[in-house]
Amino acid sequence: MRRRDTLLAAGLLPLLAACATPTLRGSGDLGVVVQRARGALSIVDTSERRVIGEVAGLGDLSHASVVFSRDGRLAYVFGRDGGLTMVDLLTQRIVQRVMQAGNSIGGAISADGTLVAAQNYTPGGIKVFDARTLALVADVPAEFAPGQCSRVVGLVDLPGQRFAYSLFDADAIWITDCSDPAHPVTTRLPGIGRQPYDALVTPDGRHYIAGLFGEDGLAMVDLWADPPRVQRILGGYGRGQQPLPVYKMPHLRGWAVAGRQAYLPAVGRHEVLVVDTATWQEVGRIPVAGQPVFVMARPDGRQVWVNFAVPDYDRVQVIDTPSQRVVATLEPGQAVLHMEFTPRGEAVWISSRDAHRVSVIDTASLRTLAQLDVDAPSGIFFTSRAARMGF
Image 1 (tube, rainbow, N blue to C red):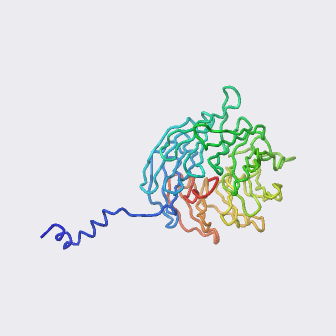
Image 2: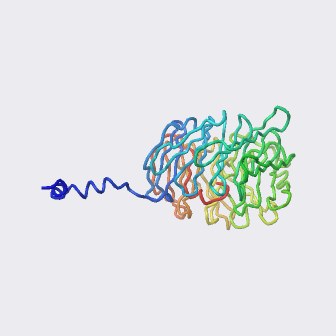
Image 3: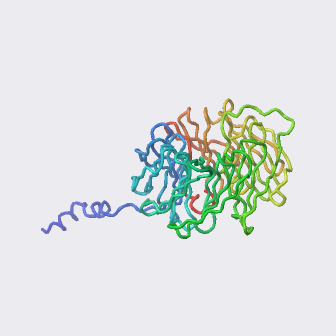
């Protein structure tokens, strides 16, 4: 009897054929959770609500962020130690890793997916890499005076191969066009306000907004203007009131834009500011439980979710946008560090670092759907970000 007939008779041939064919899956329902203490990523399936793998060896992830390739297969991980790591989510392995700086806090990927940019504290500036190979293609020092480079924050992608970012130490916003990476062109906007600490770009790509740590207010750039123009918005929002000590810098990267209103954290205050995006004037304030860190709008804009700095970092509050009031306070676990909505917003994933878990919560009923054991989780990033500007 031939070997094939023997295997067929034993029922082994179909089994061997199945083993020879790798399991195929899409990447659209995948994401990663940063294991802050271990320098690793947990790869998660957002539909099945479970951890499906782990990738270690990513260095210092104490302030890590992640962007994704256009197809959602590759995750680019920016570590605090300056490491930039390309991770394949389907094979669950590191593809490439470079140590590109001494101190780095995040990055962005260009609109066409060909360039990855890192924002750096040390040395100050941005570095731009080929997204396929991580070969360095552009280096733009944030030199604002002879021999002085600023720490860079608030890096976002813009339409075209452009990036906008803020210079914390130079009180400036720069826009770098990398259409020709060998010869990047940078537009410099000085004197925008003291100590920009983070920024966002609005969903239509028109406005870049930087929060100011050194003074009450924000700086906004109209990117459609030629040349781009800066204006101050919400100047003096804390006027006449004693600011509280700031225990953790708030973040603006949640796209907290719902309808024609933006929801922004007030620095050193227990408030969320409400801004009309047609006029960029303040139209309201919402008292919250503590100093807000992330203020994030559900994809449909009906809710805004808020987490807080110490000592209130065990809580999350839910704002109903039509009524402009807090409608729920949740306690998913000690040290809530990050939140991420599923692509259509039916659920939100919340990391609780000191509880070593990620909670998945139904945004309509506020019922806990799942709890995942993850070691010291911090940032949560889903591949749906690949299709969103500023993420």
